[in-house]
Length: 71
Image 1 (tube, rainbow, N blue to C red):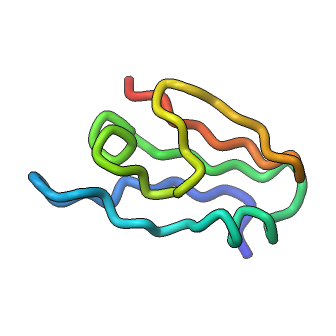
Image 2 (image 1 turned 45 degrees about the vertical axis):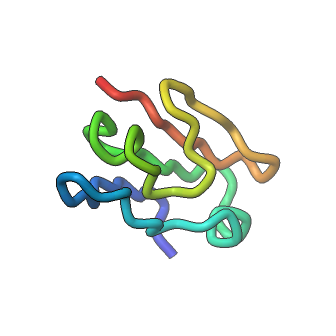
């Protein structure tokens, strides 16, 4: 399992692919990062990680950081 995951999977006009599920995040080590890179596309159109919140950074119960900023 990776310590940092950056996702940008997006097809124009389609909902973003769900690459990382909440179950996957639960299995990640504490202090790992999930970033929706260039989230302008992936975060706004459905999120590649199902736990991503647009324009927010959340920390899960197991201390995984999920970043969904769109800049």
